[in-house]
Image 1 (cartoon, helix red, strand yellow):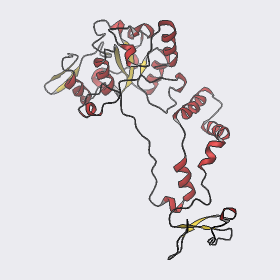
Image 2 (cartoon, one colour):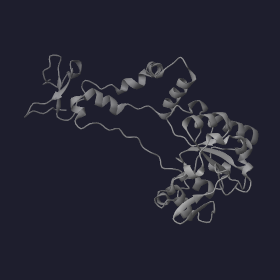
Image 3 (cartoon, one colour):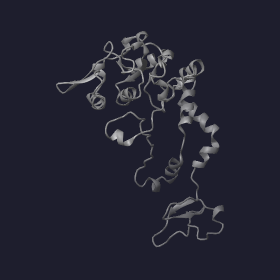
Image 4 (tube, one colour):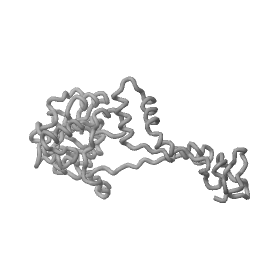
Amino acid sequence: LRSDTFWGALSRNGMILDTYRGYNATLFDPSAVFDYIGNISRDHFTTCLDAYPQSVLSGYHQHFGSDVSVSEHDGIMKIDCENQTWWLSPSCRASPDMCVPYIDYKAWGAKFIMQQATAHSIPLAIGNVKSYDSWAHVVKKHNVLNYWFEPDAFFAALELRAITMPAYNQKEYSEGLTITGTNSISIFKFAARGLRHVARDAYEMASKLSIGLDEIMTMLRELVANDTLDEYDIACSWVRQNEAKWTTWIPSNADCFLGQGLLDVNGAFIAEFVGWQTHALGCELCPSGHASQK
């Protein structure tokens, strides 16, 4: 959902469109603030026959078998679409002008959004574009909803807002019912075995490095808004403005791993614990038969 669309609907119509409840066709008419699908050129779209994988259609048919728009014929799943381009959800199928256009690519979001639209009476017309160029053209030119992910610079300037669905239900998802929101994905760090011993500083700094999604998206928006700046310029600017943050990532010379001892400026192990802070240079594995006190 584009931010300008969200704020426009809120100020002019009092509609809150960053939650699935704001699209319930039995209560609201969200199509009033979006473009009509008939005004969006079909030249940018692939046909439904080419767009939807069998697995997506069979999953939908399993849970919403009463919807005749998706059916099985001789073991093959079929989908009926408006002009072979737009799949219309049940709540607006009888009146396509009441459908909110939703732009997808290769049916990436179809597994979720088709079921969510039907279960929550969301009036959607789902179309799949042919390419990234078509995706950019349609989403930037028209008032539509679209599938996307972050962090990414492709639509950064539009400041897209996620539409909140009911909380993720693991049991339902395990059964192929995807009417709630998706599960959050944690990002983990991985390193080669033994890296901490052969490249301690790099390992320690990478372990502590942490930049929030909001910070990343801010940098990406700056990148797309300034033709004279490149990725290096944006990153350099962030480093200069956030010294207090990234300096905490720099490993201390005295922050040793298990099995290591402190070295002094001459490369010798420090034998006395008292006063070590003033002349500790780094760490080294303890010789066989020796151990560090701390």
